[in-house]
Image 1 (spheres, rainbow, N blue to C red):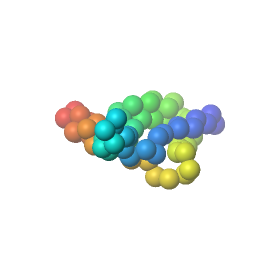
Image 2 (image 1 turned 30 degrees about the vertical axis):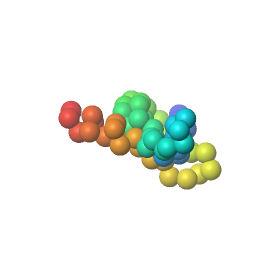
Image 3 (image 1 turned 90 degrees about the horizontal axis):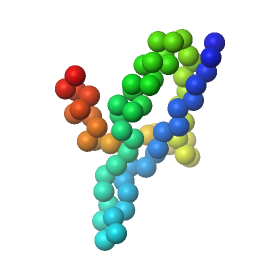
Length: 68
């Protein structure tokens, strides 16, 4: 069986020039769509983040998936 490893950001924010935090994360559709393609093709799929911490989806990417 073929294997694939998804590398996903674990960052949950980025820092603006003024020092304020901006919520962030991975864009959900950019992870879910390829995952489905690889899964349908029979790949064994793993996921990893820097430091092994749980990934955070960008909240702005979630409503977009719910509208489908």
